[in-house]
Length: 171
Image (cartoon, rainbow, N blue to C red):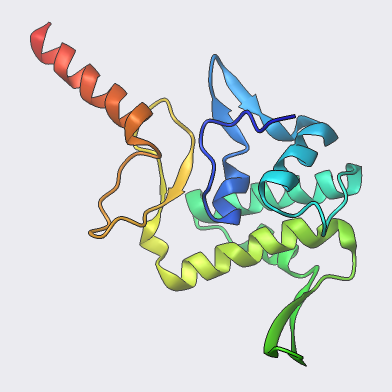
């Protein structure tokens, strides 16, 4: 199944948040294992994770935890997800490496998404944003030069907002 979501390509943590969107009503890619399979493929994790009920449960827990951090600054759930794994340092044939060590395979995608959120928070927490359109629930990582991006997509939400302002002035 092709990924039906309207916005792809964000860092893993935000991409997981974007498995819920509004399009002709609320949509949720992760209501069943088939949707998980789609998300794992889009995220490039099909070779590292199984699309099954335990993985779906873990990914949903991570999505809730990431949302709670990004929207409410509540870290408890994220710490619970992170407790399922750790970074193991090793010397590989290509040099030093930090390797994800997640004993329960079902928790790997969830743990990777939670770990990715830590990276984003470490790098630039103010660049993690929710789309400014009042009817949009999507998130993005602002990579613009001046850090003033407001919409997940200028082509959709940005244009809708500007068109609404234009018609309100003319009305």
